[in-house]
Each structure stands twice: as C-alpha cells, then as structure tokens.
Image (cartoon, rainbow over all chains, first blue to last red; front, top):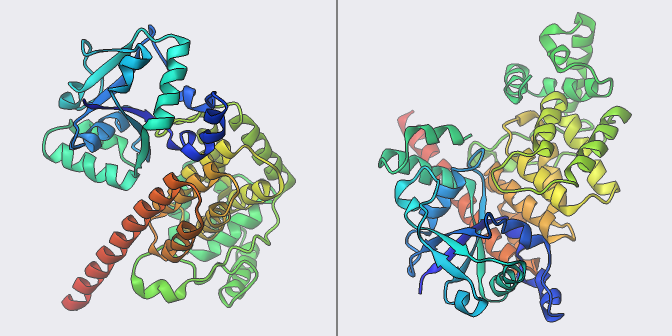
Amino acid sequence: MPLLLRMVRENRWYKAEAADWLQRGDVPADPLGDLPTRKNQLSVYEVMPDRSNLERIVRALALTKDKVADTGFVLFDSELLPDLGINTSASEPGQTPDREANGWHRDLTDLSGNRLVALTRAILERGESGTVLKKRLTELVLSGIAEKQLPEKCRLKLS
Amino acid sequence: MTIQLVEDTAATIDEPEAVLQCDDSSSSTAPEARSAKQMQPGMLVAALLVAATLTAGGATGVSGFRPYFAPRRLEEWTDSATGETECSPELTQEVRDLFALGSSEFFEDGLHSRFSRALLMMLSLHGRAAVLAIRRYVQSADPKPDVVSEALRWLADIADPTSLPERWALLQDALNDGSPRVRDGAILGFAALDDPRALPMLRLAREHEPIDELRRLLSQVMTQLTNTEHATAVADGSRESLV
C-alpha cells in the first residue's frame, strides 16, 4: 500500500509532545490546524513505497506557497485509512506547478470531525514527520526548471 | 524602504553603519536619515570615532564578526553580541505589540503572515536595534513559542550583515530554549544562515536534544553546513591555484 503525504509544520507533530495526550486517549489540538478540510475532504499526495517521489512532491507543494521555505510534512501508510472509515479518491488532480506531481494527488473523503481526530491520532502514533530544508528545495526547484519539470516562473518563489 | 536598502548602506561603509543604525534607533529616526552619507559632518566624525573604538575591541564587539565566506575566517570568530546597546522604549513597545499580534496567528511554512510582514518591516527599519529588542523581549517576557519560532525563521533569512552578530546570538539562545518549537526555529535559523561556524554548537545541541525529530533535523542541518564548508574550501582552493 502506498504512503500518503500531507504538508504540515513539523513542530506541531512531535511524538514526544503528543505522548501524554495519546496516553489519555486524546490528541493535541495543534496538529488539527494542519489538516483543514474542504467539503469534508483533505488533500494529500501519494508517495511511492520506495519514496522516490517524496522530494518532488514536497517541492511541488512548497511552490504553492508565497516563497520557497523549509517545508514540513507528515507521512502515513494508506493502510491506516480503512480502519478509520476514511476513503480515498483520485478524481481531482493537484494544483501545483508540477504536472506530474499533480497526478499523485488524492483526496481523503467523507471526513467527519471524529474521523479527522482519529486520523490525527493514527499519524501521531504510526506515521512519521520530516522537513525538507530551504537550501535543498532551492536546488530541487532550479534542477526542476532546468529539466522542464517546472515552469520558469517558479524561479520567482526563490529568494 | 526595503531590506535591500539596509544591505546597500551596509555595503558602503560596513561596520560604522552598524553602529550608526543602532544609535539612531533609540530616537526612532527614519531609516533614510541613518545613512552616513546624509548625516551632519560632526555626527559622522563622532560616529566614525565610536566605530574605530569598537573595531579595536569595544562594547558591542561587532569587529571580527563577518558573514561566512571562507574557512580561513573561522579563527576570526567572536561571539560578540553583548546586547549592551540601549533600545528605545518605543522600539521595545513595538516588539511587544508585534509578538502580541503573532500570538493570534496560525503559521504555515512558506506563507507570509501579518506577523512576518510586520517583523520584516521592523528589521528593515531598525536593523540591529530591532534584533536586540527582540532578544531582550524573548529573554524577559514569556512569548508564545510558536511566535518565537516563526520570528527566528524569518529573521535568520534576511541578508543583513550588520545585524548578523545579534541574530546569531538570538539563535544561539534559542537553541537552548525549553520549548522544542523554539529550538526548531533556531535550528532552521542556522540552516538559513548556512554558516559552518555553527557546526560545533549544533553538534553539542544534538547530543543534548531529547526530541527525536529535532535530533534528525540537527543532523540534516549539520550535513548542509558541512557541504557548504567543503564547497567553500574547494572554491577557495580553486581561486588560490589561479593566483
């Protein structure tokens, strides 16, 4: 089963900080801010099991922001979803400047408040987090422009 | 007024400008009036005398602290931001208001916020004095860790050599903060500075860091800085072989 990636601020997802909440059968509220839904759906991206497209997805997502910066993410196995009653849809492509990355876009559907909290809990317990540094992303953007994976205008997001 | 203007004036007269900026900040003078080129002759002479004193090892100790260019300058390093320069009450209040503004915001990577825009404007207008005021506020008040973390990311990412010692000192403080989120901002701040002189400090921080994710982040940043150090050494060697 593939992995799913969601862009977040990593420092809201530290497992040690969440441990007390999870032991009490609860979850901290801060991570929920990184999971905003629209029409009860949450946008995520599918990462290959060997993670070969992970940096490309983070690069694509970083380019949707005001400027390329250190970019955090959480990663979790899609196998977690059926137990949470959450479905996945691939009907809508992503909205990033990288067309190929847009094809890896997925929506988590039928999300209720309870399911969102359960998903947060599952990610904190069994997922992982990371950050791609700005300097690395800058290299990736420049190489993406050179290889025509990204339009030239993406250069404007570098500063 | 942009950060670029501060860089331009700094590039013109280097360290004396740093002194002038900080002194002027206490009277909330408009930044344009702080350029040495536009100062009264008497003030300029006085400022240059102060600068000469500092260059010889004076109070703020700005001398010897330069942006990272080459390994040979490692020995020039001094931890110099003593924070002895006075900050105006107005600037102190501005910083307080700024952090109050930030406490109501939700920050996302790569996205500007009202807080980040106001912070960058303050740094552009007040330079070193603003960083000093922020450092003192962070030390003396109890600001929200999210806001401090956000501030560290942005203020490390500006290209202003004149305020580098103060920004470095602020990041160094934050690296030992009790809040993991503040430490996160400090680590990412050092990544933005991309200065290999931070390596020993980051190595020590990693030894004592209890949060797994932060230890991993420290390793990432250390790898980046080590690569920067090697790349600079190679470039330096190439230049020397051409001479």
